Length: 113
Image (cartoon, rainbow, N blue to C red; front, side, top):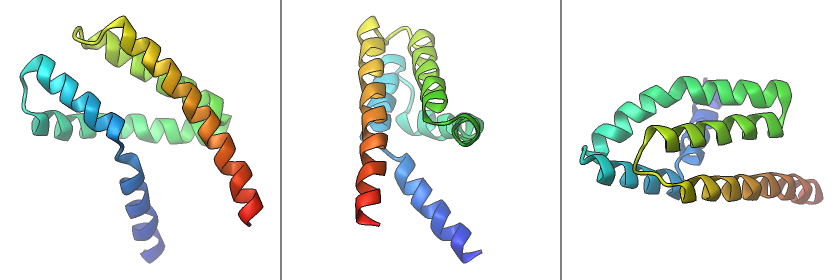
């Protein structure tokens, strides 16, 4: 149980990122809905997607999980009319940085181990 709590806490802290905060703020500004309400309901709606992403990663690897994430980002851009084509391009650039970051992290961690 202790290991589950530690691992889950680490995951919870990892899931939080500046990009998520920025997108929540953009969505709240575009819709004039409380940022707290959006964050709470969005978190509930995202839970099955996070689980699916983790399962895709475990079963099919990084690129399949990344493709899933890029698709969900693009779906968010389509759903939110306040998000522009520029946001789609930014999403693809961020996706490339994620791929590079994951690969670099695995190489560096092998050196440290």
